[in-house]
Length: 176
Image (cartoon, one colour):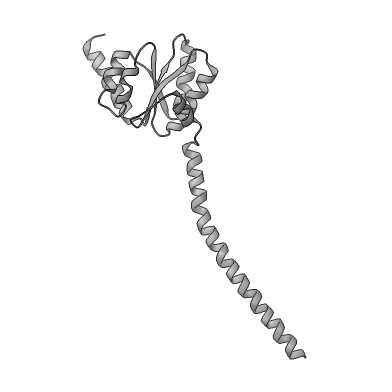
């Protein structure tokens, strides 16, 4: 490959990795093309990408970016998973794939420039996803006005009971 081709690969990967919140270095030694395709599809389905890149090119591409902490992790058969919108979903996809494969393993990751080891990636994968967090937030935001309406309804209900009791008391005193 000539220098211009390598420069294009470096620039394309650098552009993609700077957009990503999560960059995860993996080892795929011995995997078949079909297994790698399944991995790519599962990561793509959750809004991420999986790249196999030469170690030297990957090292150069991440240098002086938000994933600079990964530059020393490029050795052997290296694949890089990038998570753009929902890093938790990409981490879940990677951890699930690693559990089902003897040959695939996680090495390390960078979450917005902060280094992560395998245990931290697994912990990230156990967090609720973006959709679930948005649902919880919406439920919390909806609970405040609902409770506010219930509070006022109880006040009005109590006033109505008091007025009914006064009315009954006056009717009984007029009958006597």
